[in-house]
Image (cartoon, rainbow, N blue to C red; front, side, top):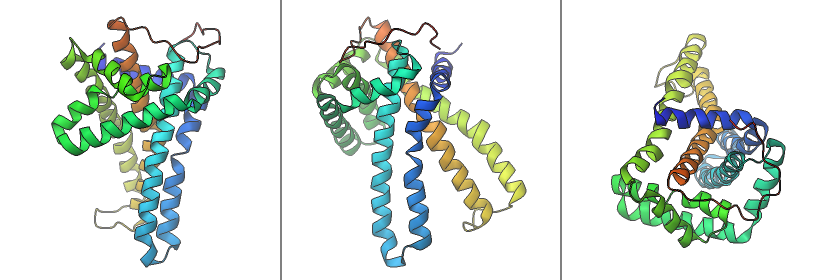
Length: 258
């Protein structure tokens, strides 16, 4: 099986294996969508722009918060924590102040230096190089700089192969979502509520926006996060890096992992 597809299937298996917890974390992403609709429907025109900016900030925070929990849940599943205990251990990891501070520092450095200075392709390479720092910080409790260095080490010796796995797997997932879910949904909605690109206020277009938002937040985004976690776990294994969870796990390992 092609490695990119295997990581996508691993992510799907992780989602199915503990869908209640992961779906619950992803469910928080619906709140900014509801707020945006409330702003569009009820806010005076003069307030729509400032309120829209506030909702956008809320959306970014919700994605970061949800992504942390989903990723740590997936990583814990890969390390043998039973599904019933994942939410408890995930919350314990995220509450750790050292991990949270390290994660925020790493995120700020990656976002500003990688995205704001290097731009586009160089920025994407830079972001990928340190992207594993998020999970290293959350799982192992390493501060931001140490986590970023540990992430860089995982790329040493096999940089382009690791980069191909890191970027290619989400691309395969996004393409699959578009081809097998969004396009069929668009065709079905078009057959019920015909609309064109110029009819942004039509019932069909509104329905498509709602369906896509739900699909992106409850399915696509969690699977992208879980795919990245699966790639990180695989790369750590082939590099011989032993991931030590801090605080130590006390739950018995689950023998029925995906």
